Each structure stands twice: as C-alpha cells, then as structure tokens.
Length: 85
Image (cartoon, rainbow, N blue to C red; front, side, top):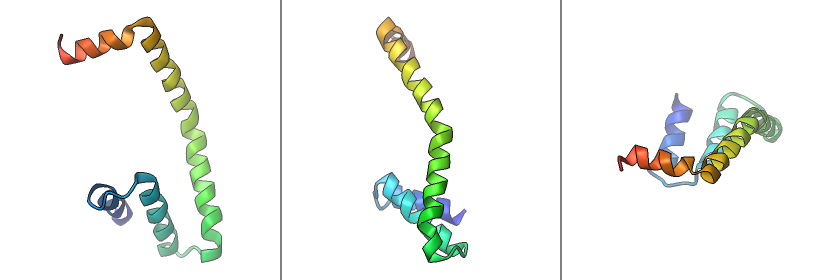
C-alpha cells in the first residue's frame, strides 16, 4: 500500500512523469523487499517484460478496433452520442 501511495504522490503532487515514478518506486520496493542491489536491474527488467507481454496483445487489439471505428465513422457517432448531440 505504501508503494502505491508513493507512486500516486510522485505522479499527482510532484508531477513526476509516470514512467519515471514507476521505475523509482519499483526500485525502492525491490530494495525494501530485501532483493540484493546487484539483482534489482534484472528483476525489474523481468517484471516489466512480463507485464508488457501480457498487455501488448490487448493494446494491439484496442488500436485495431479504434482504427476501425475511426474509418467507419463509428467514432464520430459514439462521440456525438456521449456528448448528447
């Protein structure tokens, strides 16, 4: 819970870029968890690559659906409906 609170604080109050805040908090969390300093870079790389691997397919499909909506005019209809025109 403390790591999430620190992450939100850095992003919202300090206005630190989200990626930099995530890397910093991940580094601090790894050290607080007792992971040896020499192993931290490989552990962070492993964690980020696992997350990216599981999310990349979902993001790719989202991009394709978004492009289809844009080409067919569905995005405009959706936007007009949401803003009540």
